[in-house]
Image 1 (tube, one colour):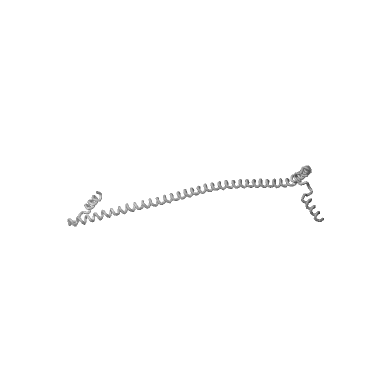
Image 2 (spheres, one colour):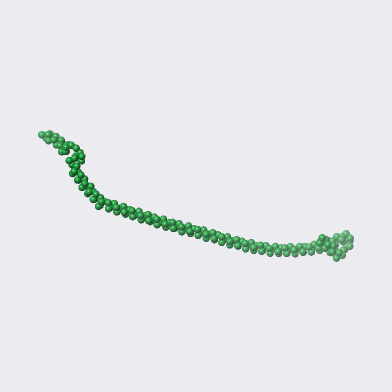
Length: 182
């Protein structure tokens, strides 16, 4: 008897007590399935719309605010950096202008100092040349007067040697003057 009961239990366990089709596709359970599906959908919709969606919206809103804040901060930093760049370029142009002005001023000062030194040296050279010319003229005058005397002495000595008589100094001087002028 135990075999018979065991065999019956196995047979009803395999059948599951139903007629033999897939339960969601059985037409006798459609209405109850639609009602339970509608109740589940409404419950899920209420849970999602009342609990999950507000949380998601708050997270999205906070994220959007953070993004907008970051964008505003980035724009402010960009504006600040552009302002700093403009100020830097202005300062750089000003510094270049000052450097060029200082360079021009220094060049003008050096040119003026060089011109003053050149003028001073020219004046000194002119004064030295004038002194040298005076000294040359005096030396020439002295040499010429010595030449006249030497020429007169030489002419007297030559005439005395040739003639044996000492010539007159007046005649010798006039002959020397005539030969030096001519």
